Length: 388
Image 1 (cartoon, one colour):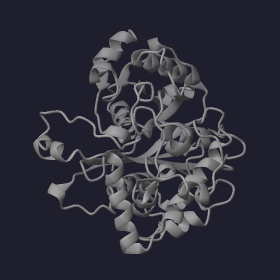
Image 2: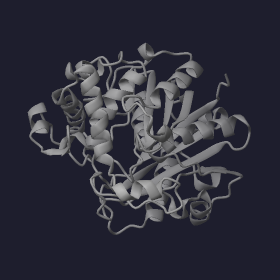
Image 3: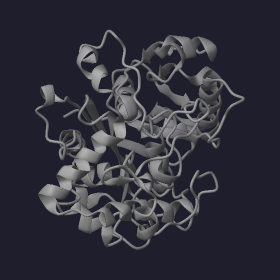
């Protein structure tokens, strides 16, 4: 399996969570400038550019022109929320092939300013999508699909709402140390269960926040990485997969993490036991449990008890997780939280996370997450990073 010589030299998370006075293009640019400054590089150094469907015009050409980039390689792959985890892999492959040496990856959006719901309102489907004629009549929404996944996991494994709530408790325990978090207040299991049912059995606090903002990453060759003088965070393993709804014949307790994680661990030559910090996408609390099991951190049906024992809390548990507060408490810009998962993993590996949540001597970290919607077309990407 191909080994990469690619490094994450720059990472930037936009501090805003509400941007009514900014354009999406401006947010992309500000994220790019922040990541380049973090890497000690300039726009003139960039020779590769990557973005997904959140970029204006849904193509890298628009933002490359807006930022006046002179690039020789671009990638506009859109896999939904996990796009940016996959795009790091694509950038690493491009660098290995000599297509570029400094790849800029940006994402940004303004769903909060535009009044987007947490997943309880139907979203218009393109008339060209083949399933639109069938799905539009039912007006399905996102939260109930994940509610059904939670119900199935409860039915098969005895998972409880209190165990789901423990995921939110862990996220809030970390978010209280993040000055930019949308929900910085620490909550209890009882708070979550009292927050009102959104899509049975999911409560309001089982759902992620909706935020404006964005983030950016700089992936470089080793020679450039050494020149920057920044801590060396290497791409060790990557994996991505498509996990479709198979015409409705789908197991809602299984995610693409089983395949993307397997590929990433194999390429890195590591196992779940080696991971000291995990950024795992948390659009809904149930998705954290499902991915913990599919990635191999827990056996099937055991993730509920694992999180209820506090194992996701930094300084307390066996697998420190989403130490920025994650999508449940910190931010979820444009429903594409994969970029923030990588940013926090980079912070942990550099030793730059908040002191209250920093994992001591963190050497191996994972970022993993889904794209689009489980049960309605689902992708998944995993990334393993290591500190040299």
